Length: 211
View 1 (tube, helix red, strand yellow):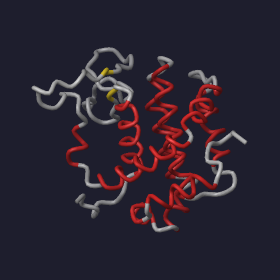
View 2 (spheres, helix red, strand yellow):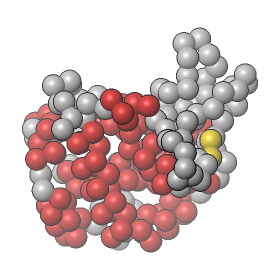
View 3 (cartoon, one colour):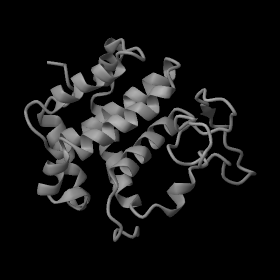
View 4 (spheres, one colour):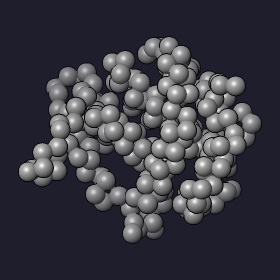
């Protein structure tokens, strides 16, 4: 069982979620691993390059006769809050299954570019929480951010992954922070049964911008 004595860090929660989301698509991203102090900014995409151009690493197909991939996120092995990340991913997967087409259409219709991506992100997030905050919408927020990161990679805008992670963290530390604290924090999120999220997801329109 993970050691939950360390305080929760919203940046780490966001990074772990995005890492897992991109890993499902065969890409390795991490906002900390692979960046040495003083080294060029690689925008959180693993790889070593002397230039500042983002490097995206395609995960090689696993070989049953070999050990773990050298690109495996090292922080996952010592993550003190692995339980939280697991529950959050499971809840996000449930939203993805129920709203897969909606998310795909929504992101596809955003038509964002490097100069408009922040405005588009903000617009959707504000619409998502327009009628209030609950844990279900927070999960949808993570899934939307992760989906937007995947779409950025698909559109060859890999530098936006780190930007989206920063905006998600800022929103958690800003507009959502008080609600999370007043509702028991991430510890309370851990204690809520996955059935609750399914009920919230089923009873509300969690995909912003779709009526």
